[in-house]
Structures are given as structure tokens and as C-alpha cells.
Length: 452
Image 1 (tube, rainbow, N blue to C red):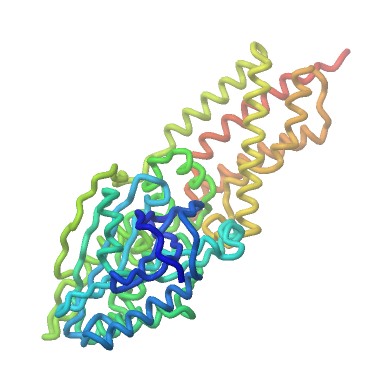
Image 2 (cartoon, rainbow, N blue to C red):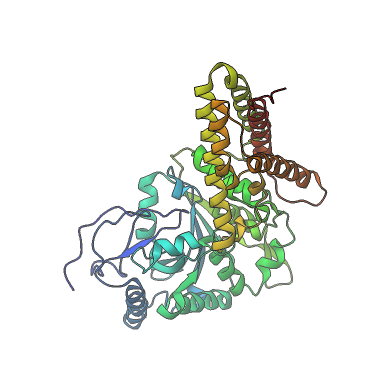
């Protein structure tokens, strides 16, 4: 093995749960250091495969335990269980925050941080798997000081919650985490909403607690839906927020419980405060027995509520519809540009949403009613737009397509008004319907009058 690369600053991933490269073990630290990089950035060669590094890490923990007491073999009475929550960062892949479980040997001070936010960029077919919704994430572990160093430097908040685990529960958690760290167990199929770095931490805690966590949180109503949380956390990047909102289907609008909303690290941090566990004497005690902020937030924090997109989208739809109606006679070139741009964007958006529904496992994008407003049929209307500028009649089938598109828009509106319909796509209805109506009127008014 060659010499270790020069030290560098770790970086988090798309969801705040950091991807990783591998670097050789540093003999000056008790555990190998995981080199973390942002998506699509490679900061150096990878000396050995990531799973081999994970196995080496596990082996080193166990070997060190034979030489001195530590996390791997400490009795449960000496193990302290702490959840560490890292706040959102500035860039889009940091907006969802990050979370980890720390196990600390209270006697010798060894503290190991376990997290589920690692992926291997060099995995074969990584980009294709990412597009198809079949991303493979990994569990990782490293000294807490190494894990938190980046976040302090980046100005992201760090909050520690020490939990009231009995010795038996702490031992069970430690044994499960070490088992999970083995190469054959470390990999899992990542899902943005139901199986991510935060839900894995939640599930590991619940398993060690004997199901107490899920029992308590499943009956607590969550504060927001998947869509609202996504819009809230991505609001600092408006165009990306709009793209994500457009692509989400009815799955993203279901009411959430406190258990489900734990897919957000900060929401899980909040929900843990509400859980009570047995105190061993017939009474109840809070699960969180100590909480303090280690490092304050020094970056712009996300808003507490999701932005209301209805007003801005309604204004945009009305403005574009008015421009199309006015420019048809007075500025034909502007009408052609605006109309063509709308049809191309609507067609591309439709292709994207149709692909997400039929070709991927992104179930949060399935059955998207926005397909009635933006679909590939828009491409077929481009010739009708340009023929109208020359004053030539359009083919009957093009008129039929325009009628179908208008009917699809009305169907989208009707579906939204029906009781029991979940998808909350009012902003896109307010944007698209006025534009389609204005475009249809402009195209029909441009048809040459029949001679008498």
C-alpha cells in the first residue's frame, strides 16, 4: 500500500449524507479515515475498494479491542449512546442535513461515530443506477472527532443528544452496528424518503429499544409532507426546488407521522425529544437525557415552513398567457419564441415525468398528475404554431391534439377538485391552464377564414 494522500477537507453528499472514497489507514488515528467528496467530484485515486476499507475498519476496531478496552468490547454499563445531528449546509446536496450514532466508552473515552450516508462513486454503473433510482449506499464508521471536523469548519450546526439506553440496549445497539458494518451487510438500496441515512439511524435505535421508538412516533402526526419538506429545504435553490416539485407525484403529499418524518435528520432530532422510556422502577423518563449544541449554525438556515408557490406561479401563468395573446397580432416573432419555448419545455418536462414513472423506481414520482399539463404531445403542436404565423391552415389532426391537450388540462383540474385526491399540484395548474388557453385561442384565431 502506498503512502496516504495529504490531508484534505471532507465534503458531504447530495442529501447531506456524504459519499466516500477510500484512503489508506492513518497510523496516527485509531481508525481509518473516510475521504468524503461531493457528487461528481473526485479528489484523488482510490487505493482499495470501499467495502474492503469497511472490512479493514471493522477488523481494526476488533483488534484494538484486544489490546485495550474500547467500544467494541466494553460492557454495556460503560457505553454511552448519542445521536449527533448535523444541520443543513449552503449547497444543494447539504440541504437535508446529516445524522450519526455515536458510541462512547465512558471509561477510556473512545468515541466511534456510525453513519449510513456513504456511497462509492466508482461503483460500476453508478450514474445509470442513480438515474434509475437504484442507488447503493453503505454504512461507515470513524472517530467522532474526524466525523465532526468538517461540519465545524463549514459552519454547520452540530447537536448532540445523549439517550437513556440501558446497558442491555446499548450492548444490543453496539452489536448490531458492528454486524451492520461488515462488508456483506454494509450495503443497502437507498431511497430519498423511506430508506436513507436518517431512517437507518432511526431504525437501528428502534431495534435496540425493542420497538419503543416506532410505537411512540407512529401515532404522532408529522408537521409536513414529503413535498413540503423538500420545498422548504431546497428553497434556497429556487429552480431546483421547482424542478423537484414538478416531478413529485401524489406519494409526496400523503400525511406523515412523526416516524415517517424522521427521514429528515432535524425532524428525527425533534421527535426524539417526545419519546418516553421506562426508568426501570415502574415509571417513565425522557429518552433524551441530555442535549446540547456543540457548534452553532453559521450558514443561512432553511425556512421553518415551505414556501407557498401558488401566488408566484399564478402570476407567472397570467403574465405568460397575456403576452401570448397580445403578441400574436402585434409582435408575431415574440409570439413564436414564447410559444415555441413553452411547447418545448412542456414536452421535455413530460418526457422526464413519463420516464420517471415508467423506467425508474422513483416511486415518489409515479402517477404524476402534472403529466396532464406537461406531456410529449406538446412537441407535435410546434408545426401548428409556425404555420399560424404564415397564415396557413393547420392539419385537422393538429387541431385534434390541441383539443386533447385542453381536455387533459381540464381533467387535471377536475382531479384536483375531486374529494380524496392527494396530489397538491395547485401551483402547476395555476401556471399551465392560462397558458394553454391563451395558446389555443391564439392558434385558432390565426386560422385563415374560409372564402365565400
